[in-house]
Amino acid sequence: MMDSRIFVHGFDAGTNAALKWLSNHGDVVFNPISAALGGVYSGVRWVLMLPPFFVLAVVVAVIGWRMVNAWFGLLAGLALAFCATMGLWPQTVSTLALVITATLMALAVGLPAGVITGYAPGLDNALEPALDLIQTLPPYIYLLPAIALLGYGPATALAATVIVAIPPAVRLTSLGIRMTPAEYIELGDALGITPWQMFFKIRLPFAMPSIMAGVNQSLMMAFGMVVIAGIVGSGGLGQTIYNAIRTLDIAKSIDGALAIVILTMVLDRITQSASGARAGERG
Image (cartoon, rainbow, N blue to C red; front, top):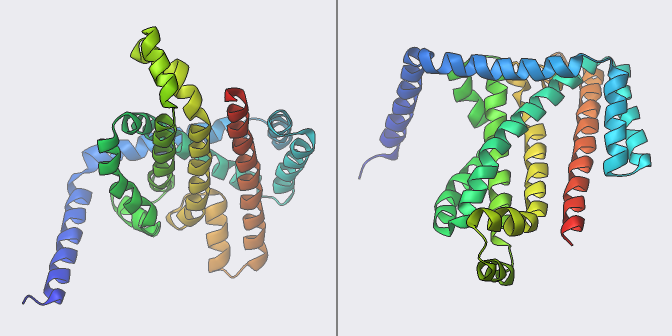
């Protein structure tokens, strides 16, 4: 019987050799990817940094008021202003830009994939183990190969964050598509509507609450990842917390943690309200 240590050594050696080969010969592919990811992130951050902090705080307050209520909107605006008061506004905006960019990229992949798997149960069953694997592996697993292929910086953090944010969007979109009551589908067939009309007028309205829940969960996964991604030079609050831990600056780490909590709670509440509003419209 083969010694398991021989197999493990061979597997590890093969993995390291493959990663080294990709790192040495894949510049023509990975350098443009790294530049593109970094450019998109920098563009979003530049836009968010254009107005003074109080303008963005007021915008978030108005959105919170319209989506939730006036009390939440006021607290959300004051909470963002508090981040600026702590001297962490550039880091807060960097984190917000990273989360927004990663979530939008994840949704660009996850929503269409969810629609396709919602229509194809066999494909959904085949994709399920891959989604389980992505969600159960430690987040650091995605950072280490990304460093070798994309370098040290925001591009690596963005790539890893996109990966962990995709599964919730796929799963909940697929679930929403499958939730359409059979009688409505039969009614659409009886009326002779086209497949596109069936999707946009019947399936999509029923799926929207589940899709919005997927958006919310993707956003939360992205927030969890950007903190960990501070170790690869992501910038923002994740790197602030990581540097504070390295230097045992407990106060600064607490400041960064508070800012992360504020951003997470504000965006979580707004997206939850959007999901509830969609459910109300359908009802």
